[in-house]
Length: 240
Ligand SMILES: C[S@@+](CC[C@H](N)C(=O)[O-])C[C@H]1O[C@@H](n2cnc3c(N)ncnc32)[C@H](O)[C@@H]1O
Image (cartoon, rainbow, N blue to C red; front, side):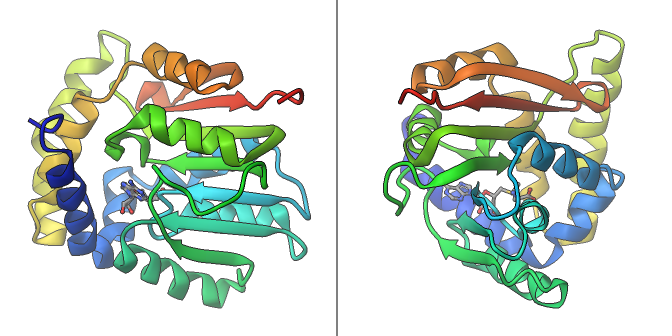
C-alpha cells in the first residue's frame, strides 16, 4: 500500500509525529527503558566529530542526538538539526536552550532533498529516522552529497534482534506491550505504527548494500543491546 501512496505515507508520518511531539521524549525513555541515551552517545562517538566540526542530524525530531553532537563539536562547531515536523523541532529548541546548546540550528526540511551545498559536513547522522523514509536510496545519496570527503555517516535504528531466542520476547514486547504503553501515555494510535515499521524495516545487510550504492565506503554495522538497535556506519572517500 505505502509504495503506491507515498504522498499519503509522507503526510501520515508527519501528522503522527506532530500528534505525539509533546510526549515523544517521555515515550522514548519509557519504551526503551532509558537505554536510548546510551545508544545516542555511542552513535555520536562513532561520527568521530571533533571540536570545531560541522555536523548534520537528519530526522532530528526533539534533538537528543543533535544536542549530544553539539557537545562533541564544542563552542566553535555547529550542528544542523533537520526534520520535516515543526512540533518535534519546537520541543528540541526549547530543550536546547537551558542546556546552552545554542550551536544547534533547527531547520524544517526533508531528508530526501536537503537545502545544503555539496560537501559541507564532517558527519551526517540519522537516529530512528531511516525506517520512516519513503525513498531510502535517495536520502542516502543526499547524505553522501552533503558530506565532506572523509566525512562519516552514522545511522542508529531499531531492529528485530537476530538471535532466535530473543525474537519471541522482542516480538511480544514490540507487537503486544509497546503499542498499549504508547497509547496509554500518548492517547494516540501512533504507537501502533512503530512495531509495524520495525517489523517491516529492511535487513541489516540490505541497508549496507544501499549505503554502498549511494557511494559510501568502509560500510559496517554493529548491534547494541542484544540487537534491539543497530548502528550502520560508512565513510565518504577522501578521493570523492
Ligand atoms: C522516531 S523520530 C526520531 C527523532 C530523533 N532523531 C530521535 O533520535 O529521537 C523520527 C523523526 O523523523 C522525522 N522524519 C520522518 N520522515 C522525515 C523526512 N522525510 N524528512 C525529515 N524528517 C523526517 C519525523 O518527523 C520524526 O521527528
